Amino acid sequence: MLGGGLGCYDLDHALDGGELKPWAREVVESITERVLFAEVSVSGEGLHVFVEAPEGPGRRRAVEDGGVERYTRARFIRVTGNRWEHPSIAHRMSRTNT
Image 1 (cartoon, rainbow, N blue to C red):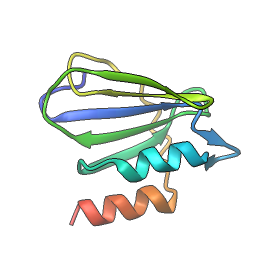
Image 2 (cartoon, one colour):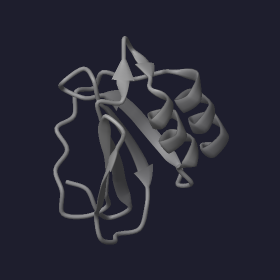
Image 3 (tube, helix red, strand yellow):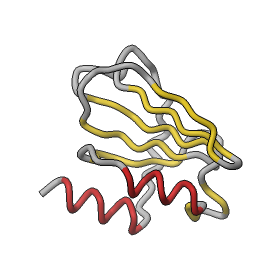
Image 4 (cartoon, one colour):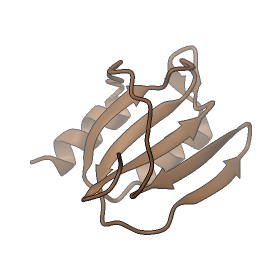
């Protein structure tokens, strides 16, 4: 369960052929929290980006042909363990985890 310093950005329909769609790249690049882990969602088209974040209210918004949700408390995320190691995430993880 999210909370206690663990949050997640859930990007729906963010991937096309395994690559980030332009709007999703903008979302990922705008994440300011420390990125802990990123994975492909159960659908194979979404992305979960787990971050360190204080608890707060959730947010949801539609973006082009997808959507973005950010939760930091009282939410379950079905994890796949299917690590997503695209340079945009790997770069953010190495930059924020040093």
